[in-house]
Length: 131
Image (tube, rainbow, N blue to C red; front, side, top):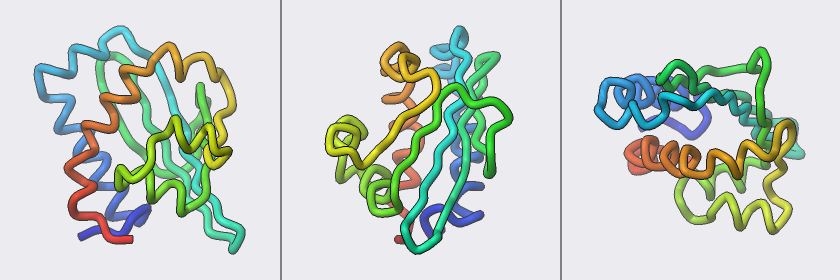
Protein backbone atom coordinates (compact mmCIF):
# COMPACT_ATOMS: atom_id res chain seq x y z
CA UNK A 1 0.00 0.00 0.00
CA UNK A 2 1.65 3.22 -1.13
CA UNK A 3 1.90 6.17 1.23
CA UNK A 4 0.03 9.24 0.01
CA UNK A 5 2.26 11.51 -2.09
CA UNK A 6 5.23 9.11 -2.00
CA UNK A 7 7.16 8.16 -5.14
CA UNK A 8 5.29 4.82 -5.14
CA UNK A 9 1.94 6.60 -4.92
CA UNK A 10 2.84 8.90 -7.81
CA UNK A 11 3.92 5.89 -9.86
CA UNK A 12 0.57 4.22 -9.19
CA UNK A 13 -1.17 7.42 -10.31
CA UNK A 14 0.89 7.36 -13.53
CA UNK A 15 0.13 3.68 -14.13
CA UNK A 16 -3.61 4.26 -13.55
CA UNK A 17 -3.53 7.15 -16.05
CA UNK A 18 -1.74 5.06 -18.68
CA UNK A 19 -4.08 2.12 -18.10
CA UNK A 20 -7.04 4.46 -18.62
CA UNK A 21 -5.46 5.68 -21.89
CA UNK A 22 -6.03 2.16 -23.25
CA UNK A 23 -9.78 2.20 -22.55
CA UNK A 24 -12.63 3.24 -24.81
CA UNK A 25 -13.33 6.15 -22.43
CA UNK A 26 -10.04 7.81 -23.36
CA UNK A 27 -11.71 9.25 -26.45
CA UNK A 28 -13.71 11.53 -24.16
CA UNK A 29 -10.66 13.79 -23.71
CA UNK A 30 -9.57 13.91 -27.35
CA UNK A 31 -10.17 17.66 -27.64
CA UNK A 32 -8.82 18.62 -24.21
CA UNK A 33 -5.40 20.20 -23.66
CA UNK A 34 -4.74 20.88 -20.01
CA UNK A 35 -1.84 20.83 -17.58
CA UNK A 36 -2.67 20.96 -13.86
CA UNK A 37 0.13 21.51 -11.35
CA UNK A 38 -0.64 20.16 -7.87
CA UNK A 39 1.19 21.69 -4.92
CA UNK A 40 0.76 20.21 -1.46
CA UNK A 41 2.52 22.31 1.16
CA UNK A 42 2.39 22.39 4.94
CA UNK A 43 3.64 24.87 7.51
CA UNK A 44 6.22 22.32 8.74
CA UNK A 45 8.09 22.60 5.42
CA UNK A 46 6.63 19.52 3.71
CA UNK A 47 6.02 20.01 -0.01
CA UNK A 48 4.95 17.64 -2.76
CA UNK A 49 4.71 18.64 -6.41
CA UNK A 50 3.17 16.69 -9.24
CA UNK A 51 1.25 17.47 -12.38
CA UNK A 52 -1.41 15.95 -14.57
CA UNK A 53 -1.39 16.56 -18.30
CA UNK A 54 -4.07 15.89 -20.86
CA UNK A 55 -3.20 16.25 -24.51
CA UNK A 56 -3.52 14.39 -27.78
CA UNK A 57 -6.16 12.22 -26.14
CA UNK A 58 -3.73 10.97 -23.47
CA UNK A 59 -3.56 11.38 -19.71
CA UNK A 60 -0.25 11.46 -17.82
CA UNK A 61 0.97 12.08 -14.26
CA UNK A 62 4.50 13.22 -13.43
CA UNK A 63 6.31 14.34 -10.29
CA UNK A 64 7.86 17.78 -9.97
CA UNK A 65 7.11 21.10 -11.59
CA UNK A 66 5.18 21.26 -14.84
CA UNK A 67 7.02 23.16 -17.57
CA UNK A 68 4.03 25.40 -18.33
CA UNK A 69 0.94 24.63 -16.23
CA UNK A 70 -2.43 26.04 -17.21
CA UNK A 71 -3.73 25.82 -13.66
CA UNK A 72 -1.97 25.45 -10.31
CA UNK A 73 -3.87 23.98 -7.37
CA UNK A 74 -2.32 24.56 -3.95
CA UNK A 75 -3.47 23.00 -0.70
CA UNK A 76 -2.10 21.78 2.61
CA UNK A 77 -1.50 18.09 3.32
CA UNK A 78 -4.67 17.64 5.39
CA UNK A 79 -6.84 19.09 2.62
CA UNK A 80 -5.09 17.05 -0.08
CA UNK A 81 -5.53 13.87 1.97
CA UNK A 82 -9.24 14.60 2.58
CA UNK A 83 -9.75 15.23 -1.14
CA UNK A 84 -7.95 12.01 -2.08
CA UNK A 85 -9.95 9.95 0.40
CA UNK A 86 -13.18 11.50 -0.89
CA UNK A 87 -13.96 13.00 2.52
CA UNK A 88 -14.20 16.50 1.03
CA UNK A 89 -15.08 17.91 -2.37
CA UNK A 90 -12.75 20.27 -4.18
CA UNK A 91 -15.62 22.74 -4.37
CA UNK A 92 -16.03 22.72 -0.58
CA UNK A 93 -12.27 22.99 -0.02
CA UNK A 94 -12.19 26.01 -2.36
CA UNK A 95 -15.16 27.67 -0.62
CA UNK A 96 -13.51 27.08 2.77
CA UNK A 97 -10.27 28.68 1.52
CA UNK A 98 -8.37 25.41 1.92
CA UNK A 99 -7.67 25.04 -1.80
CA UNK A 100 -6.18 27.83 -3.93
CA UNK A 101 -6.41 27.92 -7.71
CA UNK A 102 -4.19 30.11 -9.85
CA UNK A 103 -3.33 30.49 -13.51
CA UNK A 104 -6.08 30.17 -16.10
CA UNK A 105 -8.77 29.63 -13.47
CA UNK A 106 -11.64 29.70 -16.00
CA UNK A 107 -10.33 26.36 -17.33
CA UNK A 108 -11.41 24.67 -14.09
CA UNK A 109 -15.04 25.56 -14.80
CA UNK A 110 -14.68 24.92 -18.52
CA UNK A 111 -13.31 21.43 -17.87
CA UNK A 112 -15.43 20.51 -14.83
CA UNK A 113 -16.40 17.18 -16.41
CA UNK A 114 -12.73 16.39 -17.05
CA UNK A 115 -11.85 17.08 -13.41
CA UNK A 116 -14.70 14.80 -12.28
CA UNK A 117 -13.44 12.11 -14.65
CA UNK A 118 -9.94 12.38 -13.15
CA UNK A 119 -11.38 11.72 -9.71
CA UNK A 120 -13.04 8.56 -11.01
CA UNK A 121 -9.88 7.36 -12.77
CA UNK A 122 -7.86 7.55 -9.57
CA UNK A 123 -10.64 6.21 -7.28
CA UNK A 124 -9.16 2.70 -7.20
CA UNK A 125 -5.95 4.08 -5.75
CA UNK A 126 -7.90 5.61 -2.85
CA UNK A 127 -8.79 2.20 -1.48
CA UNK A 128 -5.19 1.18 -0.85
CA UNK A 129 -3.39 4.42 0.01
CA UNK A 130 -1.99 4.93 3.51
CA UNK A 131 -1.73 8.33 5.15
